Image (tube, rainbow, N blue to C red):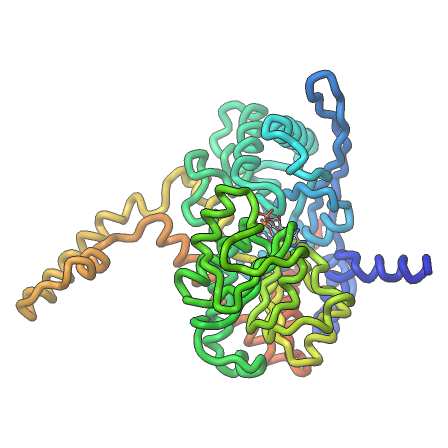
Amino acid sequence: MAKKNTAEAEDLNLMNIVNRQFDKAAQHLSYPPGLLEQIKVCNNVYYVQFPVKFGKEYRMFEGWRAEHSHHKKPLKGGIRYSRMVDQHEIMALAAMMTYKCAIANVPFGGSKGGVKLTPREYSPEQLEKITRRFTSELIKKNFIGPGVNVPAPDYGTGEREMSWMADTYDAFHPGGLDNMACVTGKPVSQGGIRGRREATGLGTVYGLREFLRHKEDAKTAGLSGSLEGKKISIQGFGNVGFWTAKILHNEDQAKIVAIGEWDGTLHNSTGIDINALEAWKAEKGTIKDFPGCKHTPKGTDSLEVACDILIPAALENQINRDNMHKIKARVIAEAANGPTTTEAEALLLSKGVVILPDIYMNSGGVTVSYFEWTKNLSHMRYGRLEKRLDEAKRESLVRATEDLVGKQYLTDLRRKLVRGMDEVDLVHSGLEETMITAYNEISEVIKRVKKVNDHRTAAYISAIEKIATSYMELGIFP
Ligand code: NAD
């Protein structure tokens, strides 16, 4: 029995899952084995135990920052606060960041960090102390900095933590002109960028739209048409799950038939009003008891709901041998990192389910983080220089067409036509472009490489080819 448990644990180990996914893709490529090994391994990991004093009490915390690949610099990846964090998970997530950046054509190497704790169990003051202390540990070892390693939010962290990190880095580097570029996902007032908050969810939606635009791809999952009216179930109503749900509900008129959270799942087969749920959660701190919905006790119930598209947006290993036979969705859009185990994936692919992989689907976060980093280095808000010029040009065009036909546009339409591009428009446009280009590159691999017909393997091939080219062009330092 103990033996079986060990084997199961090995199977669920995210590092093993990522390495198996890598190997599955690498067998279709003919690079020297040593080069593939160099791409696959995690270059270095910093493990630290640090004390924090709360009143008279001392408490110890464990933290990690893994640097997977230095083929591009700086390195980039989120910081996660969770009691489930361990070194293997952080290394695996760092590797996924490398592949994700390559897929999204974002010029960073992959990194990831985490602190083992449950945020709910600490006050904001305590979390601030922990975050500042962890940041100072990263500074001491050169594991953070605008040109070396740039963290971002992840599970259990957000704008608030990023702001504390930036401020701590700034305190250690007085006068550093680019200090604010040491971390992304900051509040806009602290050098953040408009559009970062919703970036990962919006990227997931852009990915789904592009998938459905590829009619042949959608047909393999038995789907056609747009997202309008599609039944969608989402696990997780945090940053990624919430924004994905909100955009799908408001902009695509999709039907969100279930939402899972840590304390249960809401069901409504005619569609949940996401805006009302947002207000409910803001007031009550939970989605529980939201009116008009059936409530079941487990967050994982959301995975087994009858729907067209299932979006896991919480944690890894959620779709596994215990529930894989109960999955009813035709498409799994992985907004979370590593939500599907190898065994579950094999079964679902054999049943014709399309899995849109995490390393593509949630790359919107790092893409907009890249825009934030370049904004911080340029010290200028996007659109500031050209917005009024853009508006003046649009105004002349609109006036010219009005003069030509002798009629005026309706006021609302006129306003829309004349409005110049602001930061958020540019960010959304850059994100959409990134997600469309990346999907087409993955699709091209499926067409080009014999015997590859799943999106994950194709995404890995696309990433490995780009990273291998980079390493070969750089050469190896003696
Ligand atoms: P988050 O902490 O904001 O949200 C996660 C949500 O999942 C929380 O609301 C939590 O209560 C809920 N949850 C916990 N256990 C659950 C369970 N058993 N069933 C259902 N829900 C549960 O985190 P996030 O930033 O939204 O990240 C979610 C996932 O997306 C993670 O895998 C993360 O690595 C990945 N991701 C996040 C970003 C980003 O920009 N935030 C970018 C890329 C990938």
